[in-house]
Amino acid sequence: MPRRYPHVAAVVAMAMLASACTASPSGDGESADAATEAAVESPIAGRLTVAVVSDAGPLNLFAGTEEELAELVYDKLLAPNPYVDEPQPWLAKNVRGIDPSMWEVTLRNDVTWHDGEPFSAKDVAFTIQYFKDAPTGRWTHHVSDIPTIDRIEVVDDTTVRLGCAFPCPDLGRITLADLPIIPEHVWAGVEEPSKVTTLPVGTGPYRLASYDAVRGYRFEANPDYFAGAPVVDELIMPVIEDPAATFTALRTGEIDAAARPVSPELVDAFGDDEGIEVATTAPLQFLELRLNFERAPFEDPALRRAMSLAVDRQELLDTVLLGQGRPAVTGYPHPDSPWTNPDLSTHLILKRPRPCSMKRAMPITTTTGGARRPRGRPWTSRSR
Image (cartoon, rainbow, N blue to C red; front, side, top):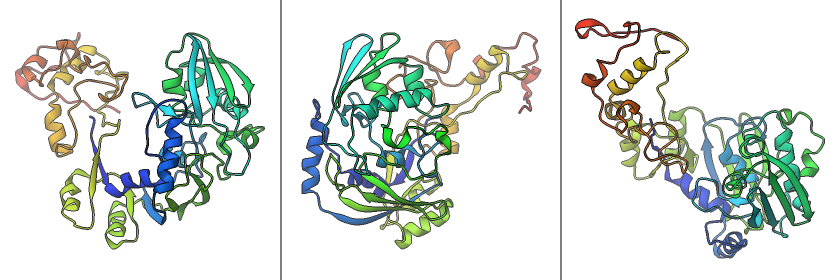
């Protein structure tokens, strides 16, 4: 069931303050250039302390990490992500399709890695090939499966061409807006990327200066960032797993913000606190009620349809989440995803969404007749 996660408002502000990249004009690298001009006029802040929920390790992209933290260190060719209508030029000045299965990427020439090494087309080519070869990683399917990039040509220091095994019209809008670029001079020769524990080197607005599994993270602003120096000099991100401890730290001023959901029953309480502001967001996340259809009796699609009809999603939303969200009536994926068919319905048997109905659900029985008990007595099942 999709839900909105209320967050402390300062977290939203932090995302804008940290990178100072809030402009979004289109075309030929104008996004980053405009952000640079905006950053020059922005006031400089010293330190911002933001509590995070869990330890994500030293931000190794191949070992599972929090993308929100990794994006402080790494950049992508287009920004901010594939979930906007038109991702804008970022590390790339321009991305264009040459033919249905070939793309050409023109890069900025003013970008350096955190260690001072210049960024070039060789890094882009290396990144794509390395993700293709890596045995693990959240991003590998974007270059190996959908689409399958099977040709990588470095034309010169600022130009690279990418060819797909089949027409790939969304390579720019999806893959290049999602794939973080890594430095060849750091990762070349690393045969087991998931075991790397050194601090990352990126081109992003912040450098991870220190990391400790107990104390958390300390980021330092990248003064040479191509989109302009961040307006916050230092980000301190302690790990506070306990919600009560997090909110106590927020109230006492020990931290400036907390990057964690506020449970529905506490939204009003925090909203009434003059020192705290709660922001409501709608991420592409949802709660799920899953059935193991490999175990009896759930292998029968008729029973699953009946259960879908019988579940009152609005009542679940109101009871469990106190109305913080929307009832899930469009199936998977999330209704706000750009790839969701707006005509989808969880009530497939009805061909369109309708309220739950026990009257319509009860006549549906399994082929063995074991899913329904006579005279309306509840039917129960225990399954793992």
